[in-house]
Length: 150
Image (cartoon, rainbow, N blue to C red; front, side, top):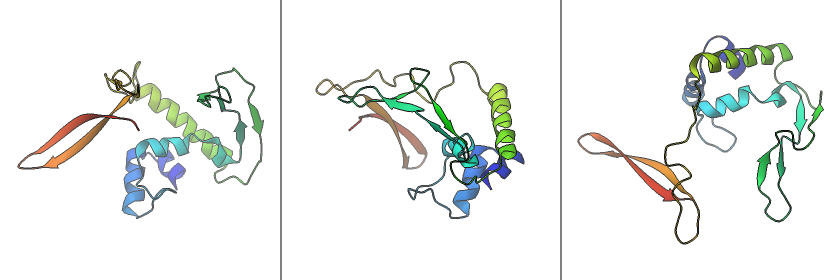
């Protein structure tokens, strides 16, 4: 349904709202979001294809997960499992994703904020994370606070 709605012209946010209104939760029991919909639309596993070693651990001591940008070989396994969507539908969605990225995206577009990754705890060195609370008073005010990541 997600793939067909996207092809028919719905965006990620509209699809997320539709799923939430239908009472369908994510695997973890959370509500749907536009970024999660985009993750599904760009995931090759839905057409029965596996790409191995997309990520790797930098070493066995630190175990930092790192995206593989050619440092290690990647392996593709076709027909690893039954496809949920056919290859033609998946390719149509990829084409639309690229068109929309070209049309609406711009250089430097990120989900980060100006201070992201710059504020660190003086004791432990961990980064602070932006959190937003909405308080209900006479007017709705957005309160933005920076919290230390645990």
